[in-house]
Structure formats: structure tokens, C-alpha cells
Image (cartoon, rainbow, N blue to C red; front, side):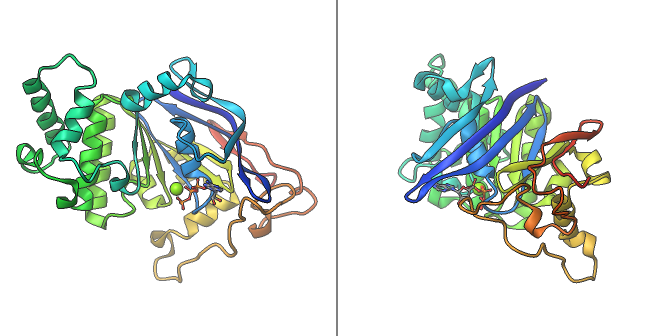
Length: 317
Ligand SMILES: Nc1ncnc2c1ncn2[C@@H]1O[C@H](COP(=O)(O)OP(=O)(O)OP(=O)(O)O)[C@@H](O)[C@H]1O
Ligand SMILES: [Mg+2]
């Protein structure tokens, strides 16, 4: 069952010298109790897609088409009061830098109690108990003592745990995790990913995991979408994706994985992804694509089902 449906999202950014398309026809279906990984190089539009889901976009963003359906409601046209409700309780965001969602001036306890007491039907003692409970759920050591601690007294991994605890406190149905572990070292990264995986299993939470780390994806994702320059170029269930990677860009990403290159030199994708201001006729990957055939790739390739539930946007597949 899908919980969030992004259908044909088109978004542009207004700059001094014009309006530049940034997301092209992005469609994603996030299913209940699944981790859906959104993968792609820096600047391809992962965060803009994520922020569209809670409609927290920069002022110069213009949505030119599409809808995002949650609970039968189009988030993109929802009134501000509905959006506030959604962000506060149903859809939680775990950002790359936890300090952007923790207030340095308040203790962890204050910040947890604020979201817990939003419901309004708990006594103070019950709310404190709940705060300790969610901190235990995220395996915070000495949860009770942590209530009196300020964010700066915690490590990066511990701050991320607090943010995940806040999502649990509101019983969020959807967690958008935008590179939640990029700022953390590898062992902590694994702990946070394990935690998100447990939350998915225990609470049937739907998780959008944004990352450029295909290794992480292989371990934890149920479904994968690969984005290139504002377009979803491939989408498939995890096993199918790894068994049968089809898009030349996805293949290049796979080849760049250290485990696939063994002692060989790490193969990187030559060239740079285009900026949003760069006009490209047809397939936006074509200038970097080893399989490009100028006779056909000058037309925009649309996402099409090439195999069971396996969608690819490429004329050459
Ligand atoms: N406020 C803005 N004004 C103009 N362009 C923007 C703005 N915000 C983002 N962009 C551009 O939109 C594109 C997508 O940005 P986005 O932040 O979604 O990338 P990303 O995939 O999340 O990258 P990263 O992996 O580095 O976080 C980029 O080319 C970026 O430069
Ligand atoms: Mg980003």
C-alpha cells in the first residue's frame, strides 16, 4: 500500500537570469513499511524532492506541475494549517546536519516534551515518561539523564538519535531521512541505519532514505530510485535492481562501488553532472553516456517498465 505518491512533479528555480527546470516529471511511490532509497550524485535534486513532500521549499522554487498525495490530500495545494499538522506529527524529516532541527538553547528534554505535549492529553509526568521511553527506543544510553543535556553536549550520532526519537514521539508515519549518516563515521552510520531499519519493522514506518551511498542502499533499502539531473532514470525493488541494473548511469554508479572494483582502480563516472542552467536536448545523461546514440538520444526518454516492476528511462535499454 502506498503512503505517499509523488506524481509527475515538475519544479523550477527562479534565478536572476531566468527560470530553470530542476525536477522533471518526478514520480515516486513510497509504500507502507518500506525503505525507499533515492540515490544520485550531488545536485541531482534529492533534497528538493524531499522538501517538496513537506512543502518546505526555498522561496525561489516554483512548482510547475504534478501532485503529492498523502492520505487522499494533495500536499502541494494543502492549506498552511494542514501542512503544519502534517510536519509536526505525520511526516518527520531527519536532516543531514542534526543541528538544523535541534535548538541549541533548549535541553533535549524540553525539545522532546514540546513535541510530546502537542497532543495535549498527557500529564507532565506521563510526558516525561514518554520522552524517556522514546530515548530508550533509539538506544540512547542513560535516557533519563539525557533529558537535562543540551544538544552541544552530544556527539553527532547521539544528536541524530534524538531527532529520530522526536519522530517516534509523534508516531510519524513517514520519515524522510536526507543523508542521515553522511556526517557520521562508519560505525555510527551502521548503528543509525540499523535503528531506522528496526523502526520500519516495528512500527511499519515508511522511510525515504536519501543517500549517494549504494552500499548502504544494498543493505537496507526495499525499493530503489536513481535520480540523474532532476529525473528518475531507474526504479525497481532492491533485489531486482542489483541483479539486473539497466540504466547506463546506474551501471556506472555500481561500477564505482569499491566492492565491485576489488583491487582495480576505482572507476568513477567521467565528466560532471550538468547544472540546472545547462540546456541539454533529449536525455540529460547523454553527454556522459558510453551508450549514447545521437540518432535516438536527442529525444527525452520516459520512464517505462522494462521488466516486472522495473522502470527505466533510456532509449538504449
Ligand atoms: N534555492 C535554490 N536556488 C537555485 N537553485 C537551487 C536552490 N536549491 C537547490 N538548487 C539547485 O537544485 C539542484 C538540486 O539540488 P538538491 O539540493 O536537491 O541536490 P541534492 O541531490 O540533494 O544534492 P546533495 O547530494 O549535494 O545534497 C542543484 O542543482 C542545486 O544547485
Ligand atoms: Mg541534498
